[in-house]
Length: 82
Image (cartoon, rainbow, N blue to C red; front, side, top):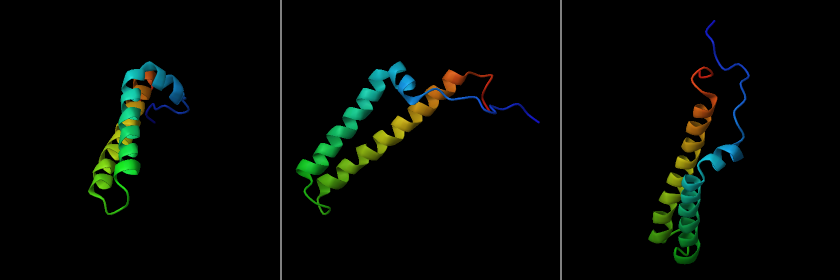
């Protein structure tokens, strides 16, 4: 059998976020501004502003998750990767 992680614990998300606070604060601000546009300007499902503001919310969430995964892999190191 090949060597794998087999029980290697990933670091807590809070620790990963603290390592790269600037990126995560930018992602959060993008999501918050887009949500504010959705609520304040895009008053309803039929509004174009609402649907345009959905794009940064989704993209920000994807970038947030990808950055956390990348940081956790870096934290584990080359020895512990699958």
